[in-house]
Length: 229
Image (cartoon, rainbow, N blue to C red):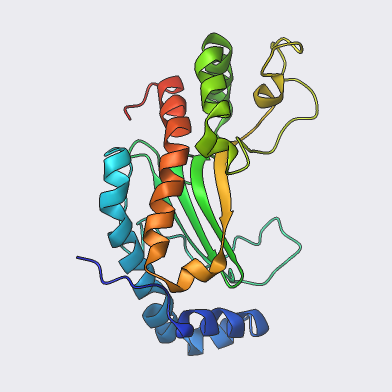
């Protein structure tokens, strides 16, 4: 059973210092500290959320392993970025569908930063073939899509979100009732929660509530992609 009681002061202290010393020499000198005060409690959080996630769907993985599990690596991909700092200054985890291999799969997401907490789920920048299937499914099943968009738990979290095309995608009616959603390149429900929750065991309950709110969207995406939910 997980002993997660919220993130301790050392978790936040580590990221404050990393922001000031975002270089490989500093991180190498603090690697064991990172494992102790970030990776270990992240693993506890993932273990704590696992049974809550399985109530929503058993098709999503909550894997506490620090490598190859639900936790995102701290190393930034700087190949196409002007910002060449090597490390992320936040912790995050992605509970993706068992059929998925990366962050572009349907999943639930938690983002822990010094002064920011984001919780939700959906699908982020799916490959072109999967994106087309989701758009076509919305066209074929508009009533259920509208029910998801109108659900109180979704509206309370800012509605369905995701970056969009400027123009309607080719082959789709620009007058379609859901054209603004058909223009999306990602589909997710994401809330900005009170960062004070990061220090409390209540974080698990709040995360589970956010995942439940996004669960209906994830079910719809899974139906579009013919995946079990």
